[in-house]
Amino acid sequence: MKATIYDVAKKANVSISTVSKVLNGTGNISEKTKKRIRNIIEELQYQPSVVSSVKKAIKTIGLLIPDVANPFMAEVARAVEDSGRKRGFNVIICSTDNDSTREDQYISMLRQKYVDGLIIATGLKNRKAIKELVDSDMPVAMLSRDVPYLPLQTVVVDDFQGGYEAATHLADLGHKRMAMIAEDVDVPSIKQRAEGFKEGLRLSNLPFNDKDIVYCPHDLHESKKASLKLLKDVSERPTAIFVSTEILALGVLQAARSLNISVPHELSVIGFDNSILAKISDPQLTTIEQPKKEMGEKVIELLISEIEQKSDVKQRVTLSPKLVIRESTSQCRK
Image: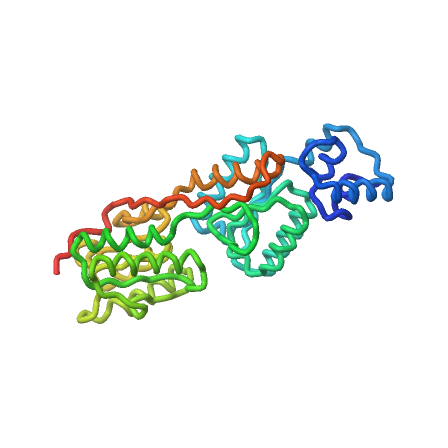
């Protein structure tokens, strides 16, 4: 069987776009890599086929997200896909369900499909996998996640600022007894939201410490259970709750409704993301908006720039969140 460009790329442990650039004499490829690829071409006796078939094989980007059922991640994926298509790239979306085995399987599959680049919007529990990606000459960009010790294109939102703005909004409304419900503290973005929230309250001269943060899995039912426990004690009940994501915020609203606690008259609730959930909840949710469209556009811009060898510079872009005030927060009446 005749060798293909896929065989060459696989044996050289590079993307097919890199092989194509060596064949066409384009791109900023190191002499060492060029020599290795040419030796493999000669070894496999590869004969380049029609140029159009090579072109059809490239211009594809893989996107790893933690959960396609999460409305926020679905909207981010849509923003990435729309931005990619505008630049002539197709996007393959893979939902890992926060499972390290799935992450490895998808990364392996995408490398075998020889996508031109990869966007990772998951926690990527297997850090070895991403290091192997970087070493394999695959252009990689992180979205809404950060791996500081590796040189990667990165687009994140200032989660600390988001938490800070949530705190100052509630403080301005006169709330003094507050709590926070958050998912896994080991997620860096969630940790930053919590730190920003604490700092905003500190600068507003309001008491708050780690015991006022309730952690629970990223699940609507679990959030409702945690909220019921937090709200049942009338003497210790907070007048406002900051929630790290909107799925968890819906659990708070459900718990308040079951206890006949009026939102926002007796309890103010503020979420994070500004997904469709914030707009269809009852009451509509005050939230910290992540700029999803801008996130998708920027990560595509950085990744394609690297794919097309227009820049070797690795950038870390931090975008600003924005407070969106709706119906779930109001002046404290106690």
